[in-house]
Image 1 (tube, rainbow, N blue to C red):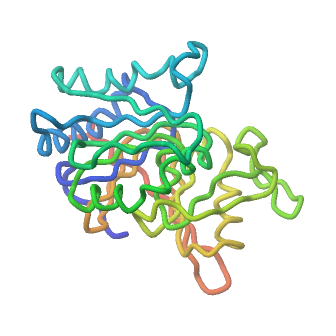
Image 2 (cartoon, one colour):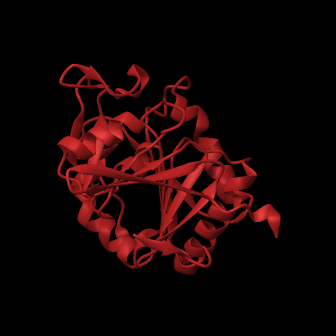
Length: 261
């Protein structure tokens, strides 16, 4: 990853460290840019594909209740957008990924990262082709956590030692790292400030195969261009973790304050 790009228009990966915040002014430029790029790929037949873990028949499911927030993000900027929700439930082996020619943009929502991966990993070559072509990908929480070559999918302990909070376990006690979608090289940790996940990101660097980790705060978006340039938006920070010999180097980056002209 290199220096920040000068604008958000030509970027195709938008990685948000938390759940959707449709009324969050600091993330408005991200959603504006996502919609702008989606429109570039739109035809009369193409749609925005929204992937959510959950059972649409369960009205108490959090993702079911929040689905309208994703649509709000789009429709206030693009009222005529065609949005189709693909629910990630049931047997992952029978999940049918939509025809790639029918997609002008992708949104991947929250859930346990291992669950989201179980449905999408079998289609990572298709997702990779779409992103390489410039089709925008907007990932929230787990949707952001799974994009790296290796994905930190859960765990709050390492060799019995606590490395994050139990609410960040995502179904695993011990730190668990798996193959991700491989859309970028670095691994991604999310909810870093809200769930004290920095310790897990550091531990993953110490014991895992990844060379870099991008640790993203809540209400913060790391945007990645097709050529690997990055930019931040939102209220928090991204911590860049990299190997420095036998040590882990950590560099913090904050989004520019656009209110200062």
